[in-house]
Image (cartoon, rainbow over the protein chains, first blue to last red):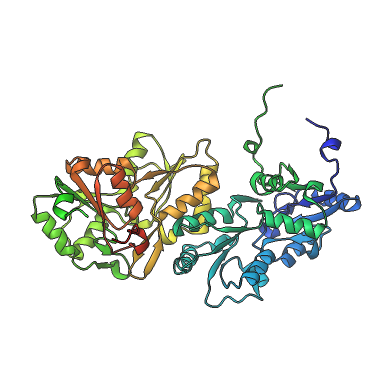
Length: 249
Length: 249
């Protein structure tokens, strides 16, 4: 294995995932992961550019940043790339009016969006909001459209809360894709457009950046496919089966 | 197109789907589809063998038959092939103890099954039972198993109630498959084992049987792949897009 210095040669920017890397959500907002507050502080003192690149779609960026600051992190709203604002941009560009199946905590991000007479559906990590009734409503809206358009804010399989593993938006995206015979458009990691905008906001090229995350598909796979380096932490949703088995040395 | 007489030559047995063919479920139990009560009566007066082959997994066979009889159908419990009893047989044969994510109406079918310390998950059309909490529990049970086994009673995309289209178990099967990175075992149509047992119970070979249903995949595709003839009705969940577009004649 190459030495760290060699593997990080030329890196100018670091993209940090949030949930499972900086903190685990849960009761009372969640808990910082050991060492992460200091790690962010050291990165910010270094010559490296830092940006937070999250698929968090239960909370608005303002609420997320507020929570992280209470946990001791040095982070501001302008440093966060998140899927809800990215989705709003797409909806406006394409003149789409969404039916929203999202958590109440993120609804404020869509305040400026026309949701009357919907011609598409946006789903996010709705948590308890993924009731049968709400899923059925989203399904019925899609089935009544001539060209059903479904946006999914991320496609994560699950995430880790302090109480255990929790279903993320991805399984519900798959459910609606199957029910309607369509393919969703993913807004968030691992979509190339999402990494592109995060890198642009940081002013760094893909080959100069490293993504640090706990999701082998959304963070590591997505970043690598976009030409970035990537590093998987062993916190959050990390499971030993994520790692390739190395032959005995 | 071949004449009806030719297309039905050699048919000795008729398998009838129930929901969307005989009746549409809904408020107060649902409503018989026009002409279906008389059609069943005529089939039964004919020289053809008749069996009911359903993916209904919200109700026990006893409740389903009770409902159909109240709607005027001539049907008895012994004439119905349904996925819950088929699943119980498999669970017993393989010594599996299920965590059940099913509708209360079908739970009695599993009365004789040991559900302690579960080593597999069985999902059925749970309707409102598909809450986030219940889905997450099923997910967590699967993730804690070394070899996760998921049974799905059917894999229908949706069905039609008098009030509109409703999500069936299939989308939720897809959700758990994706979340856990596994493939479910389907008990019910279009599984070949399911058609096999229905034909055995009727005493008819596949090439002598015709399946009548409203589901282009579960009923028509499944039966045809098993060597049967099949006929799609235009009631229930039928949509014009189910039909292949014929070239202008």
